[in-house]
Length: 211
Image 1 (cartoon, helix red, strand yellow):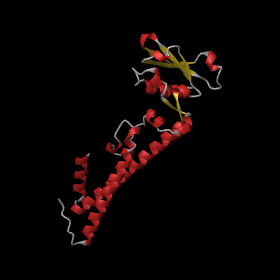
Image 2: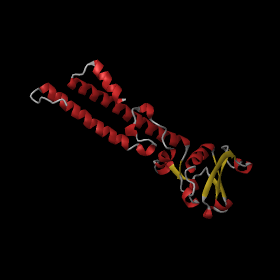
Image 3: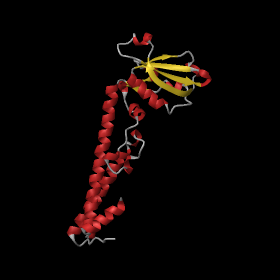
Image 4: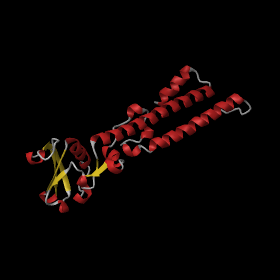
């Protein structure tokens, strides 16, 4: 280990700068960790912004506040067809298809249908615009065994624009923090190499071993 000569102001300054950078790294990773709930991967383990996965759509939707958020049972663009919702337990999520002409005529938007199959041959059909059904199809794939009382409370964004704006904010913040982590790490490495007096060849060896 390199021992700092605290009688030399230059070495003290370098030591203090490394400590500052390490503290900044810890703070930045703490901020990054707060975004973990939006992603399947732990962001603090990523090497950089290029490794950032797509955010979890349900997690982003659940983060919406106030008038930006609706529930499946009270979304103005969603209609539910079923006589057995009180006894419904989800077993299968069907494909998205064109809605019946009756429902299409009730809306200015082209509507689609998603059939949910349950135990004892019970079924629920959800009529809504395609972007809502795509969201439901993806989320409900992991909700098998859930009752209708649970499913009907599934959060849905008020509209696609609202969701996309929130998703963009999450992605932008995560990428910014990941870039910051990479930048801080590069500065720390540079100062440590200087403290140890490593040559370019030695630096290359160290970095190759660290990959």
